Image (tube, rainbow, N blue to C red):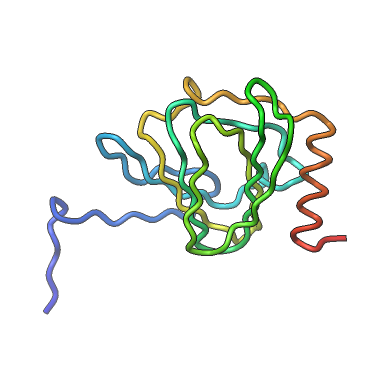
Length: 145
């Protein structure tokens, strides 16, 4: 038996485009996919961001991802790295500086407040020392020479 489920009951979304793609916006939250894009390689990472009004949830669906978390209020004073495991939920807390690097086959599910935008999500440039630390941590975690 073949039948069409009404769109009022079910939506189905996917994305194979590079980068961030919101898929579902509800009254209060957004679900998006983040696929690899060249700007997310460790060599090209250049800034940290934080969300002042929302936690942000990441779930690794495929590939590899390292979350970089920065301690500090107005500047990142210490960098921590967390290699993500598939299908585990990682909740980056509100106001936590963060960045991430992805392998070319990576796909992340992201859940955040619907009103998350550049207006309430400041960004700061990485210093050369911070970028060097990101590269060092990536080489160490991904066992690169």
